[in-house]
Image 1 (cartoon, helix red, strand yellow):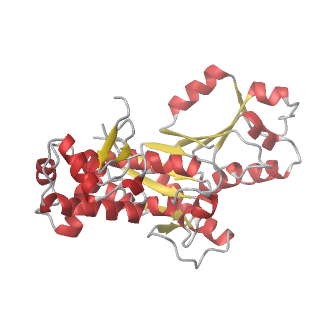
Image 2 (tube, helix red, strand yellow):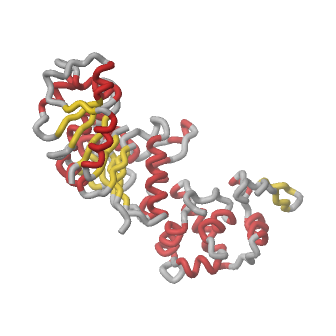
Image 3 (tube, chains in turn brown, cyan, red):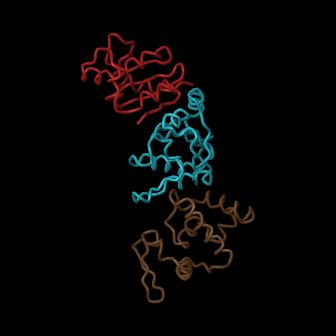
Length: 113
Length: 119
Length: 100
């Protein structure tokens, strides 16, 4: 995949080869909306809740969560109703760690295909 | 059943990439549900020291990364007591809970795993 | 359920030997290769450490590394290995701990 750009309000935002933001400071809710649209996802409250948790994870641990870590972290914060693969897969096209990191403006999680 | 791995991390966070590589092994094992435990030994115990400021050297915060281990299913962390003591750290606050082991307990620990990887 | 510990660094610049001797179990093996064979030098501080607890473990060294460094091993109870013997040895132990 060649490196692409997003254009938001006339501003160009660079993406890396994993379609993640090159510069984490470029992130804004509009950027998340635009990235979600590329994945065919309409962001709802349920999505935002997870995106903000993924950002919190990154602030806390300085890395993006893989699926297992995401599930566990969500379960600890929001309970098992949301901290499970089924729920998170449903929100993020079956690739919760990868897409949530991407939409939250974070680097691609390691060990994730 | 998956083979168990004991990872022995012996290098300081500032001494090249060995400490970061060891952590990568642990996170990968966690992501794939492999049973892995970590023993911090020799200068590796310095990875657990609180209040370090890697940004001063433009380095990533390894101790923040380490604290993610339980999220990746790596819950069993051990530290060699004599290595803390030798470095004047016997009473120091560590960034995370690790069981302190004496030499005999470490000998026993090594015997409990299928594989040992030392970095 | 014994372990084969492989050491490759000089006992004067690395902590491998010192740390290994603390955690070696009865019946384990220790293989010295590369600069680690310096620990066999008679009268050296490292040799003394090695010999002090030699009843605990089996000691091996890579012959070519010993030979190259002109180390006299006649005073020490050490089995010298060529590479095929080294490989065979690794299989004999339950696990291999390669110290780096």
